[in-house]
Length: 99
Image (tube, rainbow, N blue to C red; front, side):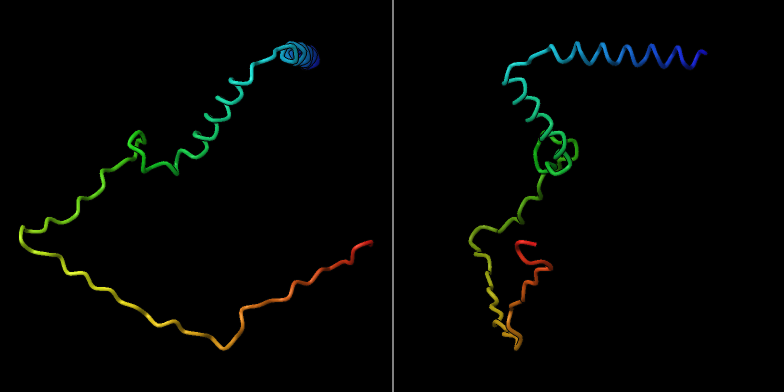
């Protein structure tokens, strides 16, 4: 009997809460702000380069070059290798339009 009474009270409370929530209307800026906060929260782990992130680390400074010396810059160019196979494929459709 307790289970039935508890279930009835919970369902009644949920139904009343749902009707009460349907009457609430929020202005558009609150929806925009909420969406922006959700986007930031869901991508928080990808923002580790920002100073406000908890895992932020200062970038390493470039090595010091003594005055009067110029750094050596070497460029390496690798030749393009052409394969014998053409880069193409066939798209197969499992059905025909109209089926």
